[in-house]
Amino acid sequence: MVLEKSRSIRYLADMNFWQLLPRPFAVLAPMEDVTDWVYRKLVCDHGEPDVLMTEFTSAAILCSNQPQRAMERLMVYEGEFARRPLVAQIWGADPTQMEKAAKLCSQLGFAGIDINMGCPVKKISKKGACSALIRFPSLAGELIQAVKQGSQGKPVSVKTRIGWAQPETEVWCGHLLGQNLAALTVHGRTVAQKSEGKADWVEIGKVTALRNQISPSTLVIGNGDVTRAGAEGLRRLSGVDGLMVGRGVFSDLGIFRQDGYHCYTDWPESVKLSLLERHVTDHRNAWQGKKDYEKLKKFFKNYTAGFEGALELRQRLMDTHDHAGSLAVLNQWRGARRL
Image (tube, rainbow, N blue to C red; front, side, top):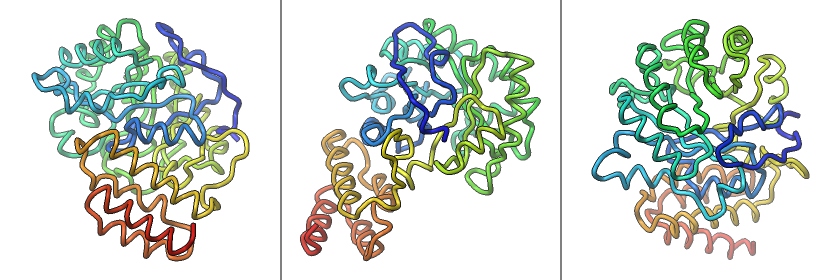
């Protein structure tokens, strides 16, 4: 299977790491309020993807007088840069701000810069950024060139979707391929679909065919509904160089594991609850109240499934409002069950 392929790539400074990756390769998707360094480390400790990305980060805030809120999204743990290539994903609609943000990310040590041109959230697209750029291709081109200028030689990539209200893959992705990107990730849904319906991997395959004509050196990465069991089929259908896993990691934490893979569904209750305890504890210690505890609740379902009483435990956890509360619930539950 594609996600089992042997990997030995390590990040080398000042090099286009994308060209050194094994084919096919696997990428952990950038996800809002998910892929902070706490969760990236937890994922990597149970199976390392070839490439990881940060949460998407506002260039405007990075360039403001109070950049701390955005800088939190770019925090890494000790030794992370030496472990696997880590790419900073940024977003914005102002070329000057994007250039400055790219320069900062390069100086911080990230292996590359990725531009978010796919987020469907309305409050973001209303600013003319992310998915809105599908409707403003000229501005998208300006932003790419600005990020290249600021990246100080680090490879620049883009993550996008197949269209706004309907697929416009060949026109939109053809335009992006004309920008000579290091890599282009295509989520097989339109902006209007958000996360609904199935990802269209036939459309993603059209991007691969276009790449072969327009920009042979650009790597194409497919995204949307990737599972361990279905990964190889999606790769063969689309011909992509790599696969990006987003929500799939929630239901299968070990999806990137090479040896000794076991579907997460079959992991023992004791192991899942130990992972939950680690996640809550690390989140508390890392952020010291800087990040909203309530955002952590989106993970609870991942750890409380597949065992007797899971729904009851999940409800108890959802009723908590701080780290101490969820840890107390966990300790009580495990004690009663002698886990």
